Image (cartoon, rainbow, N blue to C red):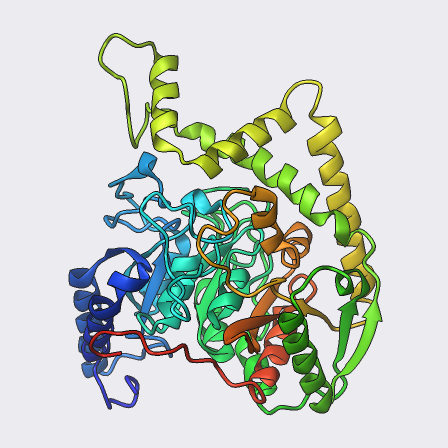
Amino acid sequence: MIGAGEVSAEEVTRAHLDRIAAVDGQVHAFLHVDAEGAIAAARAVDSARARGEKLGPLAGVPIAIKDVIATKGVPTTCASKILEGWRPPYDATIMERINAAGMVMLGKTNMDEFAMGSSTEYSAYGPTRNPWDLGRIPGGSGGGSAAAVAAYEAPLAIGTDTGGSIRQPGAVTGTVGSKPTYGGTSRYGLVAFSSSLDTPGPVTRTVLDAALLHEVIGGHDPRDSTSIPAPLPAIVEAARLGATGDLSGVRIGLVREFAGEGAEPGVAAAVREAIEALVKLGAEVVEVSCPHFEYALPAYYLIAPSEASSNLARFDAVRYGLRVGDDGQHSLEEVMSLTREAGFGPEVKRRIMLGTYALSSGYYEAYYGQAQKVRTLITNDFKAAFEQVDVLVSPTTPFVAFPFGSRTSDPYQMYLADLYTIPTNLYGGPAISVPAGLSEGLPVGLQIMAPTMADDRMYRVAAALETVIPPLTPPALSGSNS
């Protein structure tokens, strides 16, 4: 509509800002709304279009950004008290690319502190609520981005996926969450949680939208040493091909080891129906074995906390952020300890302690070293499976969105939310969650996993599924413009 001149970018931006004003008091998807910056960016796009400049397909389209991505001059807190009020002096690479594409940043979205969590209950600024049921979680750690899209506060958003933090919120809010191949999107300017796992990616309402946004943010970045020096696959073309509804010749793998894992009956039924729909579109289903997937959860919860304990050592009360106890009466070590005690929340502290223990002298090889060996075995399982099939499918999460507080007292039960998503992070391949219907009136996600640098395969299959299971719309929230 913007490209055709039916509406201006400023009109679209103001409509979304109005929507945020109307409903975000209930949803709490945003930590910071940059209304002034958004309107200025929209006006710049409208002016460029009036001058006849050639613009990209997403020019003028608003977007919400997870608050773990550095945004120049705009607060970036990682939902933590330790970074409260911090305004980066630079933009992350993906923000530079979003700005260059003419997109309009609405603001920064809520998340689990430092992206550590599976429910967005661990934000220092209060939880985000699921637009489908305000008494339930929106998934984590990127619940704010997913909720913003589901509640129509933003048409597009950026999340980050370390163990499922784009896909899992996508599944429980009925949105599309895409984790690109690790290294396919830049981590420069992404506040690090687990450096060998963190992957920025799109959160959208349709598969084509995800592919279009992925194309904007993806590609090699020389400032990121883990960035892949290769062009992106033809992901937008693949999404358009999938939208024809023809999956002839596509082989889909069902992971035998996931069959017995405790998915709720309604989730299992919705996923089964989605797979049957893919078969009707011409796909062939093959059962494959990935015997080491059962060790993915414990391996992840050694690797990720170990890398987190190293990465979060930079928050030392010296260089930036919160500083507590600097009154001339305390030593540097005491100031550091007091600051971390006041600035970090319970889940961050738990993971720092786990990681520090796993990396400590005498335990490194027994824990972190062994976990890395398991990671290699899981990678080999993926490679063997992809010799037989084009993509793998599974539920995205074992259950639908759960009520607030129902799992915070048992961290292991909380960690089970990422049961199906973690293997892909350990492998480094791409995966996407797409709506697969409802269970108990709440969204269910189907996860589609592909080989590294074969992101186009998952987009094709996901777009094909969308032809038979259309995008989901949550019940209307109260408030104007709903």
